[in-house]
Length: 225
Ligand code: DCM
Ligand code: MG
Ligand code: MG
Image (tube, rainbow, N blue to C red):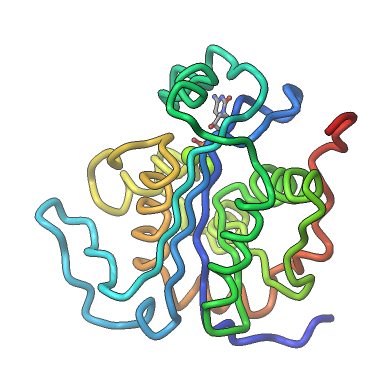
């Protein structure tokens, strides 16, 4: 059993990609929002005009668009609004050392210990990030925590009538659809809003049950590049 940890910073992240796991997806966009536990536990929560919580004032964010070097499936292009051609035409580079350094530098600025947070992260975002960083020989500190809010919300019984998808959880809490679904930043804002509403329970779950980055298996092993 791992010793419970009090993570100081929670780094919410989401990836947009070229498709689903059988497509051996590549990343088209990544977004990270880092929030200190102090801001996540601050009460009372202020509502924005629509009933969702206003995000804390102090947060660091990083959003990058990335040329995936392979076509985006029609389904992924439709929901994300991103195509390989569009990314290329806007001069975006592939996932290179510069991306790995930006990510590493961003994380190094946060108060440790850190916990990464992604919705469906255990099945999708963590393994894919591991695959993609592996391509450029980059790693994250192996003791970095990894929290999957899909698994945590299920185990805590915190779903709504519509289930446990990001949109359903947001709808159940705030009575409307989230903004800008399937943009990386939109999904991260939605995830932070859900987390804020359930922060004490989710942080308690993370302290005992978050996995280690070092135990995340890659989604797939690249054959070339
Ligand atoms: N995705 C997909 N088809 C779906 C849902 C998702 O190809 N029906 C892929 C493309 C998205 C990525 O998964 O960019 C991440 O999904 P999400 O936007 O939910 O974070
Ligand atoms: Mg996602
Ligand atoms: Mg998304």
